[in-house]
Image (cartoon, rainbow, N blue to C red; front, side, top):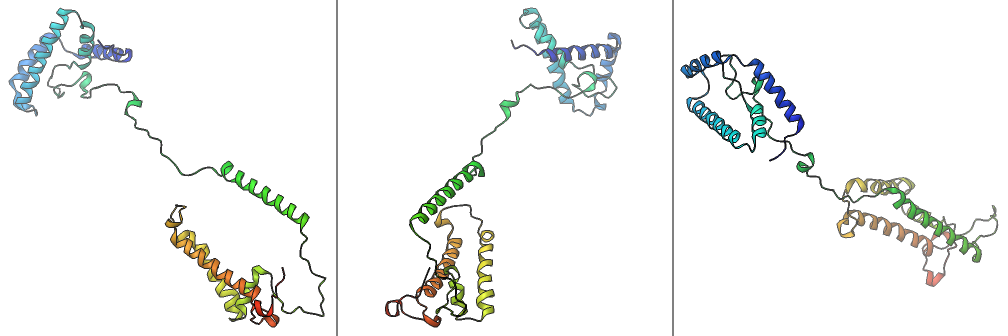
Amino acid sequence: MTEIPEHLLKRAAAARDKSAAETPAPAEATASEPAAAAAPSDSRIPEHLLQRSQAAKAAKAGGADEAAAGGGAVAVADKVGAVVAAPPAAAAGIPVGAGPGGHTQRLLTVVKSGSIQDVKAVPVDKVHTWPHLLAAEFVAALACTAFVFIFSVFVNAPLLQLANTNQTPNPSKAPWYFLGLQELLTTFHPMIAGVTLPGVGLIALILAPFLDHNPSIKPEDRKFVISLMTVHMMFWSVLVIIGSFFRGPGFNFVLPWVDGLFFEL
């Protein structure tokens, strides 16, 4: 037989004492029972439900007597019966089947919290910046610094002579990373070549992350942003190549395999 927890036993004993204090004398109870049975029409509960309740109470009382005679579950039956026992339905308006004090709530069972919780680990595709990202970037920076240091030991920088203010080199070219902008200046107005076109390109690159929210890192899933960046790189690369190898004296268009190269690092 299952053991009843100690706190439930104490609660049942307190409820039994309270019920005994509130229960009227047997004579009054027997006098009130015929009155309650004589006026069933005043109750709001249907007649068939009252009859079923009375039959259930009679069967429960008979079962309790048999259990007491057997002696196997005397303590459990008495304690549980004390918890669920209800005072007589007097004319005080207490509902039929109410517990001590007129309470209609019942404690069904006590369930452990772990048995009703369904907690599942949710996989995430994110990691912390440190050490997963910063450690790799730090190692890459050290490798690049070591490569540049070793390379500079064996190869000298291509420096020219001191600048002569009386002699302008021909052709006069900007550094290679600005040759695309210089190439645009030979074709368009400075306002368009120096402000409008570069501004539109920079704004498009800034808005690219907000236009494509796809978190995938696969190229086939990021066709829009990859196409945008490819067009940008190809456009600027073509301008740099033309300005470096196909522009001669006076920044005129030349063929490098005919007129030679006019490009210095």
